[in-house]
Amino acid sequence: MKIGIDIRLIGKKRTGDEVVFFNLVKSLARIETNHGFELLTDITDKHTLQEISESLGIAGKNNFKIVSLPTSNKFAWNFWTLPKYLRANPVDVYLTQYITPFFVPHSIKIATIVHDISFNFFPQLIKFSDLLFLKILIPLSLRRADKIIGVSQFTRDEIIKFYQIAPEKVDYIYDAIGDEFLKADIPQAAKEVVREKYQLPEKFILYLGTLQPRKNIPHLIEALARIKDRMGDMKLVACGNLKAHNADAKIKEAILKNSLENEVIFPGFIDEQDKVAVFAQAQVFVFPSLYEGFGIPPLEAMSQNVPVLCSDIPSLREVAGDGALFFDLNNLDDFSKKLYDISMDNNLRSRLIRLGAERISFFSWSKSAGKILAIFEKM
Image 1 (cartoon, rainbow, N blue to C red):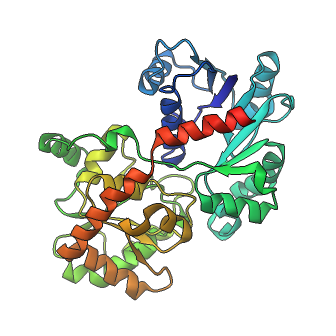
Image 2 (image 1 turned 180 degrees about the horizontal axis):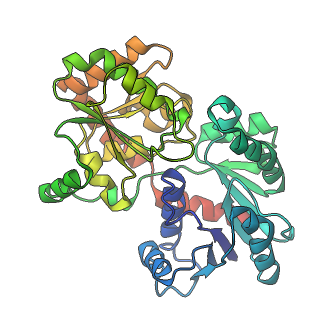
């Protein structure tokens, strides 16, 4: 087969979405196959393209090539640039995420990865313009797609139920953690370099991800406020882009309301090569999301022997299993108590670290890449 993959996310600092496509392509490149892969991007800088090629491990591979298709914006890509290219250079299967390209011949089978459909359940947390875009284009895209791929059993079931789609049209693959999280312990000197780079405190509770409203960071700040006097010099480090267009404005309000200006630190976006060292230095990792399709960061924390506290929602139960502690989203007392316990109770911490280390072996990008290639072959 000739397989086209939309890799525009790679190199764009889009956190979870970028991690998924990067690791899927990297793992596909490790599979011995006669299929050919065209990796399509809007990036044109030759140095950046070379870096992407090397990081994916495809340099010198005859069955992989990066195709650069410059475009004015993401709308022009789907409506004009990509369809024009695919009509002239058809592939058998094309993989993208969420929004499928328009005006592409039906002889080209399209698969789309859907990470979550949270916008349907928490529309009040999304900008109106973004919501309008999603509400109109997602149903059209799912109708056009020949295969829809969720990132968990939970996500698959949500897509089928909400959009009334035939179950046989929807499958799922699991996300996983990257190779860098599975390597040996990081030297202390390397940790210190990263600590200095991001001005990390000695002891800290970590959150890492986007700072959009459904990530529920103000709730985490409120929980911390209730126990801060018993936490010693423990700080909260919230990694993400506070200036992003969809960042939660209530985060700053919660900090000011609870006088936590000196307890909450925002180091900004964490470069991919620094992530492991940041996780490895955390006392606790907290993932308080209202809704997730999968949730890679809890597994990343587990891989670095950091105990994990998650909101008690179905997808995170599916991912973390018994390797994490869960709190009730509707009970701030429960959240603050468990945040204190997981920070201070060494017996609890040791148990979660042990179970978390066992849990991460359940997920791997190689298994997911093999499954998605099998999906392509069936298509």
